[in-house]
Amino acid sequence: MTKPFEFYFDFVSPYSFIAHKEIKKLEKKESIKIKYNPILLGGLHNLHGIKAPAFIPAKAKFMIKDCKLASEKNKTKFKFNSYFPIKTLNLMRGTFVAQEDEVKSFYIDKIFNAIWEDGLNMNDQNIVDKIIKNMDINPKTFFLRTSTLNIKNMLKKKTDEAFAKGIFGAPTFLVNNKIFWGQDRLEFAITEASK
Image (cartoon, rainbow, N blue to C red):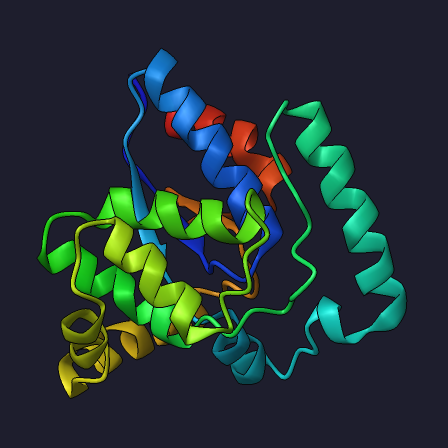
């Protein structure tokens, strides 16, 4: 039995998607409990003064190949989104609305799949609204809630907390105050959580 640990993610990160899929597989096999912490990766990068890999041509090119490699290794259905980078601010805020409505896990799964399995243009609000509606959620009401000060502050607080803990990217696992960065560090996080 492992101790609960934390997973910091943003839907914009393909590596967060790959980690999410691995977590889902592990949760079926093992008794692990992972707390999902939504952050705004762009905001976190700004706090650290980091330029995102997507905006460095050589890294962006490498990332496409690397994600394909990682997803194939893990036997994860994956399609690099041709609309990348996706503007995820409202989608990440939506995680807190979904949490209030007790559909957080369902919402996270559907949004990740729309971006990284189906390759949908989640920069198009009409497409996003359709995805939300397919979850039996009223998109208009949902996104009105994402614009409330309370919800905005929740995402900002989580991002600021991540920065304060020394987290600089996504996905990141936090176990016993130790940082494990990258989807390929999940096994190390589980080992640490088993101590």
